[in-house]
Image 1 (cartoon, one colour):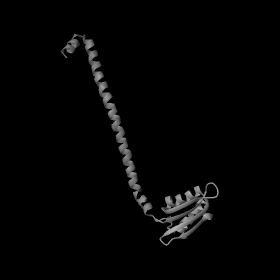
Image 2 (spheres, one colour):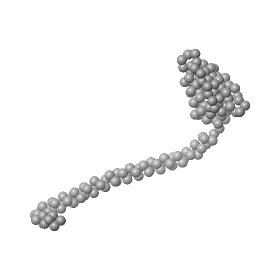
Image 3 (cartoon, helix red, strand yellow):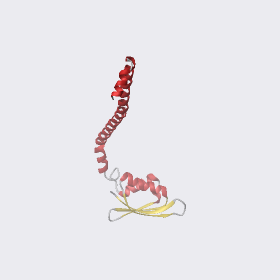
Image 4 (cartoon, one colour):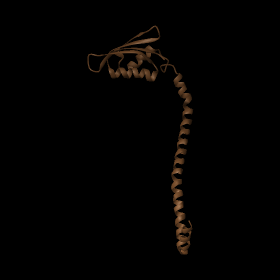
Length: 158
């Protein structure tokens, strides 16, 4: 350190000012280089917190609506499982192939003859996903032509 001080004192006044300004600029650049990434990260995290708080407020505001949907009885109008299965069969275009038989334990046995497999899946998916119907069992057999099946499905209302 004494050698550095001696070297600095040996410089002309103009050169001493330039070295001092250069040193101060170097220290300032080092501080900015360390501070800017930290500042950016903090800003990003604050933005994430604000977004998550807004999401939480929205979820809390629709919570009662979601609870009401969850507690709603099967079928928008509270219709029986037989009527619901038939109505959805008409909507999906497989009503002509459908026959039903009510079970004594609250189940409904549905027989579908020679329907397109995709239509069968649409019908079952509609019942399960939109109306909360549960599939108790299913037996699907291939049909006479490609893509056609016959099925026996046992359903239960939620």
